[in-house]
Image 1 (cartoon, rainbow, N blue to C red):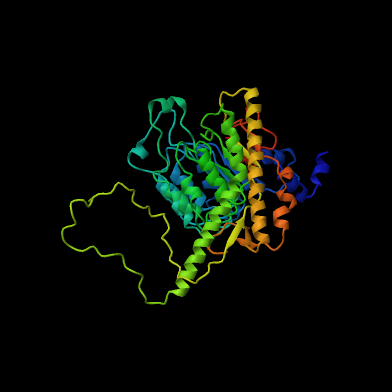
Image 2: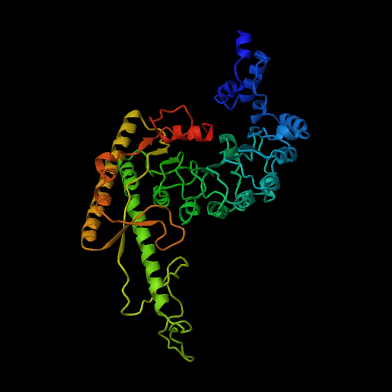
Length: 490
C-alpha cells in the first residue's frame, strides 16, 4: 500500500491537503509526510498555513525563516492565537513575510498602539483577510496601557492610508470583559474616538469590502458607519454585535447599504422589550420598507443637486449674493430680546438654494428597489420556544405589511410615470452626486417585475440564538454564513 501511495502525483496530494482544517493544518501535513515519507507531498504546505498558539513558537519560526528567503514566500495564512507574545519579535516575524494573504492577530495587554502601527506601516497588496481581536485585559486586570492614554485609534488610520487593494473581509473585535472583571472594573477603551472608523470605511483601501465585523462593546458606532455616503459600497455581510444598536440604527444600516444581505446584531438592544410582539412587527416592517426611505433620501439629494446646478448656471460670475439686512447702530428698544430660545441651526442643515424665476427644475422620482436582506440575527434572552414562534410570526407579519406599503408606493409612482414624470432607480451606492448610481426607467417592467412580486419576496430568516453554536439556530441564518467567512464561532 505504501508503494502505491508513493506513485501518486504531487498535484493529488495538494488537492487533498487543501481540504484540511486550518486549526490543525500544519500537524496534519506533518503527519502525512511522516506516514508516507517517500511520497511527493509538497513540503511548502508545512508553512502555507501557520497557527502560533504559544509565544515561543513565534521566536522559533522567526529564527527558522530569518535567513530562508524562499521559504518566506511559502507563508500565506498566519494566525497569532495567543494573548501573551513579545510584540517586538512578532513585528520582526511579520516583517519578513511578504506574501501574507490572511492575517489573524490576537492583540493582548502586551501590545501598545505603536506595535500595530509598525505592523501596518507598510501596505500588503496580497492581503485578503484581516482579523484583529482585542483583549486588553486578563484575569488579573491590568490597565497600565490605558491609564497612560494608549488607544488603538491609529491602527485604523494606518490602514486607511493603504492604496486601493482588494480586501473583501475585515474583522475588528473587542472581546467583552469577563463578568468577574466587569463587576469590579470599568471596561477599558480600545478606541478612544470612533471617527477613525469613518476614515477607514471611506478609504480607497477597503472600497471592495464585502464582509465587515465590527464589535466594540456598548459603543454607539452606527452614526460613524451609516452616515457616510460613500463607504464600502459592496458590503453584503455586516456584524455589529455587542455594540449599542437600536432599531432606528438598524434602519439606518439598511437604508445606507444598497446590497446588504446579512445583518448580525447579537447582544444589541434592537427590540426595547423583546417579549412584546409589536416590537418585532415593527422590526419586520423596517426590513421591508428601508428601500422606500433610501429612495426618498436619494431623490432629495438629486433634487438639491439639480437646484444647485440651475442656480449656479444662471448666476453670472462675479455678482455677489444679496446681503443680509444691516443692523443700524443705536438704541434698539426695551422690547427687543437679547437672547433667543430657538435652537441654533446645525451645520448639517442644507443652505436654501435660490433658483431664479423662469428656471424649471426637472422633476425626477426614484423608485424603491426590492429589499435585499436575507437574514437578521440577534439575541433574545429568556425567551421560551413558544415566544420564539410568536416573535417570528409577528416579524413575518410586519414584513408583509411593509411589502404592502412598498407596493402602494410603486403603484403611485407607476401612475406618475405614465403621466410623463421621469423615473430612475438606484443601481449602486452613489459617491459622486447627481445621477451617479442611478439608472433611468424605460419600461413598466420595473414596476411589475417578478422580483417585485410580494409573493416571491420571502421574509428574511430571523435567528434569535445569539452568538456561538450552542443555541437553536434557524436554518440558513447569517450566523452560519459568518462562521464560514470568519473561520470562527465567536
